[in-house]
Image (cartoon, rainbow, N blue to C red):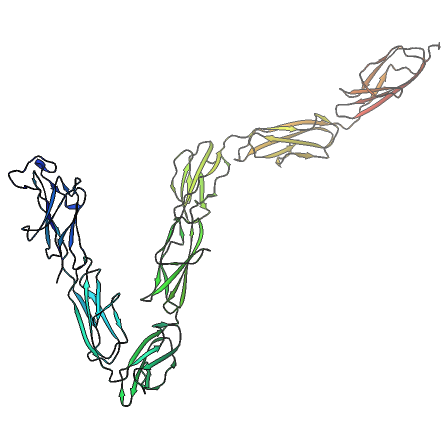
Length: 625
């Protein structure tokens, strides 16, 4: 019989509803108790035992007792006392057939409104299919069970003996000859047990029954199939057939070599003229690797450090899987397989699938995590210095393809194409900023190009040159400009100007006056004012003359000699009687000479460095007349 109980608890106190009831107590209005349906529950027990109603803390606030009613609230089933927190222990309501129960709380002030509870007392229906025919020439039987509710269990008996762990399908073997009865009933999650259903049949082995004791598995890689079989009767002979072939005599064991695909082996036993039922075994030879596909994966280039892979074998093929990331260990896995926080750079995911026959397939997916922004590159720019008021740029990046943002001088970065042009630039320094973003959204740092629009010619100066008068026919000039880098043109003695670079070396110059003129030009092409240097080349030694020098023998002890040079601004060194030369000037004077022989050697040097010499010799003898 169906078993679904609905529990209603009514909580009442002594004198509830009587003239002695006192309003204003704890609980609801005027002290009447209240019932919180959320704190009530029905404990459903095993079949044949009582169900119980339980009230948790707060279930019956302000109540002293609870009463539980059935039959529309007219039949009291049970009652119990309530603790101070409104809870009450489990109250048995019997193994009843009430689908609804009412809970009422009461105290001296009155009663609460009844709270209705529903109990599952409806038993499930069991479905029984399969089973052998009656009579049956086999010692085995298979029954398929199903239930009208989810989460059912089954209680089964064979010939009055309980079958432990009864699950669908129920496989029975080694049945004795004679009558058999299989019974089953379903038990739902609430413990309600349904009606029994049964199947009755007789095992009659009037013909031989063949049992396969050796056979291939349902799916195998092996192309050799070995079958062993026995007969239920003495004196059996056997007939076998493979696939669509005809039955022919055979013995146990028998071995067949088969191709890949589905196969059927049939065998029957024969005793005398009686042939038994044919025993059939079906199996599949599968030597083909499963068709494994990675169905969802990261893009080959991605900014995400996480990866999710969906994979599977095609069709209804059942596979087990193992996964490997990069050089990591191979681990059992299922689809989907997720990875998080992966490092930037290349990665490879490998999944291996093994089907039920043991065939293996492998699939891989390689991708790269790129979280580095590209560097913007200036492919075309204006010169570092220019006189032009326009500028043309071409951009690129080191991780093509890229998009670009650029800004001129102090403007804000804005999207721009890979070519950019501007005009009307003022004289002075200008800046172009460039930022590149790669195809997956990484943005690089800002690159900077600086150039100058320059309309002012450079100044120049000599930093080394010959002396104003030189004896050398060679000359070396070094010069510089105040706006480097500069280029220069040089002109010697009014000749046509030609390009030159410092230092300028001149040689084989003629004696006389010379002039070098240098004109600077800066990188922008501006030409500055010329600078010039003039000098003279003098290779002729000066003539030195000594005037007033004594000669021969003299008794004069004071000497006053004038030194004359054929060129202006000569300098002199003097040496007396082989002594060390010393700088001297004209006149050369000596006083109080002693009696001795004297020689004066004079070397004169002109401004060009040419030298001339003169000498005078005499004897001082104060005794001479």
